[in-house]
Length: 363
Image (cartoon, rainbow, N blue to C red; front, side, top):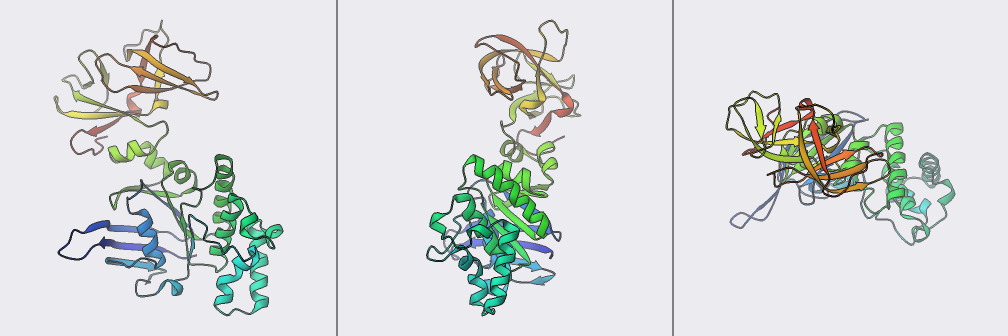
């Protein structure tokens, strides 16, 4: 198991004098030995470019990449001992699964017997023994992904890179393969970077997550830290399904936030009156109050639509004078009609407050 560190890593496309594109803007990261880090962000945020620079498939504009304390930037890809499982599997159609697994070892002139032993051992670990004689064309998407993962692992890499490994799988295959992937990574203990735009994938697999936007890491932390304490509006909005409610407001003299002329919410923050803020409230942190409950912390709302989803429900509400709808997660027993009036409340301790101008978290 090996540590990985990125020091002020940068990637710029385009020559001087012409318009340049800054794909990665000075990333600093340290991965502990055996850790799985998720690089999470939308398309074009720089996460795949970062992965390709680590693998040696993309040149580095500036900064350094350290594997086990030594720089690998001067080394070509084939000398870095970094395994990569690509999004499109990149398997050789004419070769059997066994030949695909052993191709890299054979290219390095390993003895045939050692290649066969290594292939057999890896197939047993990944659950591919019965497929060794099959060709990629006869495999399911999930099986192809396992073959691609096994081929990356068979060389016993210092670092394992996973590029959108589950993106081509259907929902059932994705759930099964995700659980297998987590088991394999923990069993074998490889230091791993997972590149994904799927928040569920990152939250369920990663020990820590780096959320990226425009080539910059917006927040680095555990899945719980990312979800429960987002550093800014982008992280709050990007992570969470259903998405967090983001409601513009103004701080009042009595420590509340006015969302409209008639709607105010109490939030425990020490901010100057008149300051413009954005309240962030996750749908599961909102509650529908009993009509007979004398709770001053709730506000009236009108039901626009209610979606019963068996295990839970999603209600979209309209607040008086507030242009943005409010999404509330309800229990499976709740039944709501369109235009029905309800009362909704939020736990102030679970309400996030962001600066309206900078987007940075204030609490």
